[in-house]
Image (cartoon, rainbow, N blue to C red):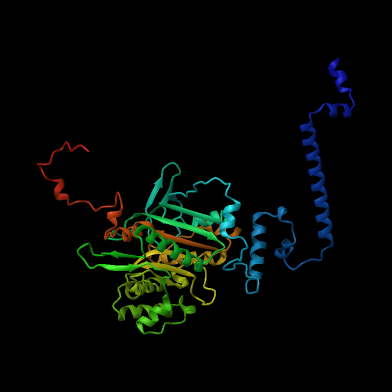
Length: 444
């Protein structure tokens, strides 16, 4: 009887018995349905009044973003970007002008709690630097992985995601030689700064390193023995500003040779020019003898050796810098610098390339170099290219080898002296065969 009476209740009475939350939920759902129907009606009327356009691509341009699938959105965005190229409105400017200083930014967001943002050590694509990676294998996922050679691509993806100031002090792994200044496992500091360029990074580098030296030693000058304490002593002066040289211009001046135009550095003719130049100057370069590798050997032989005091070698050719942005005034070059101290590279930095189309092309060029035998050439990273399609703001990136700089501050001639557990070559196997050695070992 009670159930029958309840079925006979007026709908208004039933609604009055519902909770307030349930009423709100129902009203919200009804409002959404009404808005959706109105939106579809408006779109259908809009399309019925439009004249036919030339292609499907142009038809899609007028559609609402919410109704587009990812392929349509990508096609529309790519078309719009290509239309802007070559106009006064550059879709990928080198730098934005901002009206909020860093100190104001810190004050405004000082209530936020500090946190650590670390990137993976084992990665699917070893990118971010030109180096040979260590290879490992994940049993559960049944896939090959690499030990990271640099965190760069992941940091830039974080900038794409909205973290416009990213830094990390962490370990990198490169399957390369061991010598006085190289260890397969080493520590770097890298940071990525939205709305900055490589000019800003040069100023930051000068202030950071000169300030560090002065704070630790009490002055800007240090004494260093590159060949050990019994060898020649050099005075290294970190007084800012540091010396700055343009790579191509300084190399031409030092060698007394006029190079082909930087716009033609990708051609086979230019490659043969530098190949012949290395042969004439007795500069060794093992195959593959690409233009990038030949240039790198020439720079090492004739420019790096002049860098005792801190020196910025700037404006590398694009073929040597697949992740750096093109130079805004000199075609064929990039806005990149490397800092050298006592003939050794300490920092590497550049205005970041944020054009996804050009980045993909440069990755493909790197893949061709790798297929030709260059173990240090980069892989194609599709995830990174996809991230760039979402939009990387004008960004500058900076990296420094902490171990190598520590060598200068501690007057150490061997990188092993500043590492707790450096990679060591095995001792002579003859020692293992000594019969008089105890099999029990020793206590630690």
